[in-house]
Length: 159
Image 1: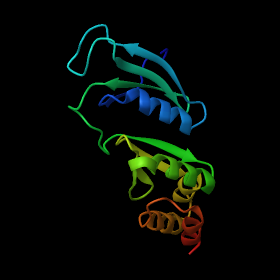
Image 2 (image 1 turned 90 degrees about the vertical axis):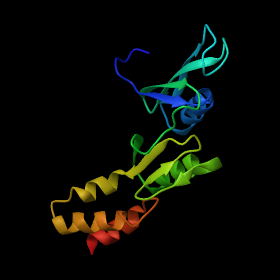
Image 3 (image 1 turned 180 degrees about the horizontal axis):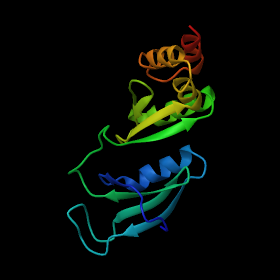
């Protein structure tokens, strides 16, 4: 990994599975390297996949098979800015499949427990509208949603 700064995500034995899944979801994503443990660790035996270097949407990430001691929380999430409703719908469906779950305001958890924010670019544009009433109405509409519906946010912004 060439980057000086990248997140390391703690998994309970399924870092390679997660990295492979994430690499299938977004363009410019791939599994880069598997690091096998040269010794037995509290998380598993010698030779197990200890670290997985992978790239998600061009961003380097590392997965650590650290065991059950730590889990993900909403305090950290990946944000994906989407170009259109089709991309929002595809990502929402893919990331909530097989045990993931939708949350409020465009947030969701995938089947590994990692939080994501699926944000339409149009929502960001409306929330930056120079007309504060349009921005407020867009924000109020978004606060009532799970998966963001761009058309509904636009209707609300227009009053």
